[in-house]
Image (cartoon, rainbow, N blue to C red):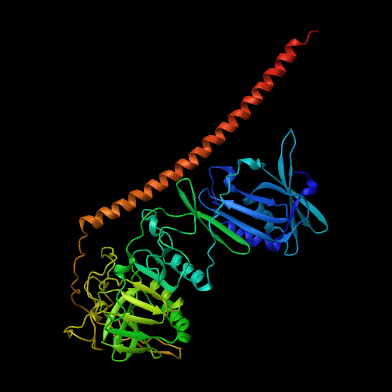
Amino acid sequence: MHPNTAITIPITELKPALAGLGKIIARRVTLPVIGCVKVERDDKGAILMTGTNLNEFVTAGIDQTDTAEPASLLVPYRDLVETAKLCGKTDSIAISAEEKPTGSAVILNYPIGSATAERRCDFIPIDEYPTIPKVGARAVPLSNAVRHSIHEAIACSSDDPTRFVINSAFIDVSDPKCHCVVGTDGHHLYMSNSFKLPLAVGAPAMAKESDVVLFQLSTDHWRFIGRQIDAKYPNWRQVVPGPDGWNTRVEIPSESLDEIVQTIERMPCSDTRDFRIGLEIKGSRLSLVARNPGSETITRIGIDSAKVVGRPILACLNRHFLTKALRFGLNTVHIIDDMEPLRFTEGGRQMIIMPVRPDVSANAAPSPVAPTASASPEAFAPPPNPPPAAPTETETHPPEQSEPTEPDAPAEQPIEQSMTTISETHTQGANGSTTAPSAEKPALSALESATEQIDGIKGNLRAAATGLIRLAELLRQAGREQKACDKEILSVRQTLRQIQAVRI
């Protein structure tokens, strides 16, 4: 690549591209070539930057054209990032390659005041970069609603490497009249069905390369190519309650959601495992209930703007899942009882959240996905004679496992609230009681246990396959290095023969 054919990229375009490529390029790589960015200029003058981790490929398009001749080279990602940090917003970086018999290098030129600085980087031949696959299947346009749903589904997916199949967003096209985007981690599930894609079962708009099914997501400036997960997604429909099976319904105005989220984040939390918070219904009033850490007092915050229909109840759930549902705009809550999943809905979108066990102490065993006890008012502080129906505002008593309070501690500690739509904070303190009874976790059937074991084995096999691919790349790299070493040895031997042939 001649210096006159250098590829020039403005910093305003380079930094966003590097931020996106950094999500694919690993910080520590075993192969130097996958730690590089492929920078190329095609015959039309378009500039593209590509990064990969051998399984996925991300390409960023630079929003400018260059009339120079086509060129391509590999630039170490870290060198590009460090050089970009030294540049101003109006600067540009010129990338070129210097190939000499004595040694080749990639050169980054960037301005410093009225002068130009130069950074030399390791040179890797362009033919060593993995081949970027091409997906030639028919493109399917995605609406804003679909793109938004995919983002929300991925936010609800799992990061457990042993359950690789749920580390994804699932597009379910089994119902031809209603397609769904699904994401779950086993504790909460997101589903959106407000669209229909031109896809059919068994005929996805994807391309098959050998035994791997590829898919591609494209925008005006970005392209992502990845591999479809070859596994059966869990039957998510069996955990979704019916639309009419609720006993209590809560409707929250959309304009109050952000305010309620901020309140939840400021509320005390004594449960560092399940991050429990309670939704308490008394009459036509909704309250958020939480225990103060290190004491037996209870904070109860009323939500005046919420409209409640149905039976009184106290349901406990993970506060992080609750705030996520509210941030997604899911403002209608359907509650069956304190042992069943809670259903948050808005339009064609919904989130199913599993309740947490109601009696949590510092020494309690980890809670399973499914509830193990009835989430009643006793979850936070059981009254001495609890009525079987609705919770009451009687004096509460903490469980025995809870940390004891100071003997002289006050029985009531008011907490100030300055919000207009949220009011009434109740704190109650007491001493001595027994813990609420809890049911044992239902045992899995042999088929369910076998299915979970198969999912774990599949995840391990995929990890092993990825390791083998990387090992093969290492072996090919070692072979290239060996050939280069052999050439050098041959050159040295020829030089020695020439020296030996010299006679004085």
